[in-house]
Image 1 (cartoon, rainbow, N blue to C red):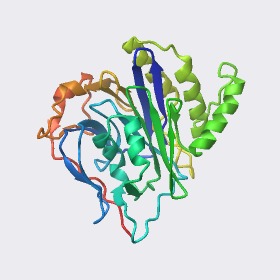
Image 2: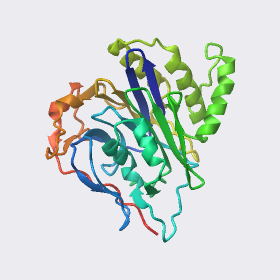
Image 3: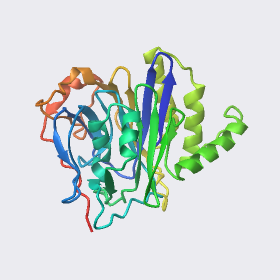
Image 4: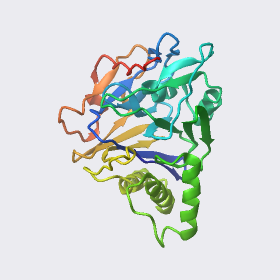
Length: 328
């Protein structure tokens, strides 16, 4: 479920937009995490441990895991559903540490400033992902995309227990099934037809991939940040699934419940709920993300409407606990 696109404009006008498509209300709230937080992978005694190098703002699912976010260096991470995912099966003497799927995106945001840095380190597989079910019973089969202020992108998938990485500015779009190599092949077919002639219009992941790929390149590429943000929103709305739509037996097709647009250069994170009338945003520069600063939360689940820059409305809150992975 979900669609993610990266807008590559002139003068480092880089914007990442995504939809969150899910079959139920995820109880999403926004959280601001400062630098210097000590964390562990919530996956048993072998859990990887780290201290966050960078502060971040994240959209949490069920207040149990980071599903999307941006750190203070402008690195963005997006988690999307992929039913074909098969995570590694570690052996008893596996030297790698364990990491709960719920903390995967947060680990990346906490530890890396650029896509290239993340790819170089994660290619070494310092941990293995331990999956689990979401609080609403959905299997945690996820792939991860990251992007940074240079326009660089990477897609991380676990297929047949092996980590597969697609790295480069050309990987602007990600949806769900099929696996990424097949999505690229399908998109090449539609590129030959041409988007002004015909585009596939269903809510299937492959069709959303094609539409997003065409429109993110077809809209004006401008350094005017207001026009660029509007353009990114228009593309990601076009790839959204209408509220109330789902397909039995196809968990990768669900309603869009919210959208985010991340402005990498200005470190600004826009949020739009399907059920509320306003787009609002967070300027990371207006948050205290220094070591020792409190974790803060912007509560979206109590019916409050927000507009404009909401940084001052985040309130100190004890950080949520990442959904622990089940170790068999």
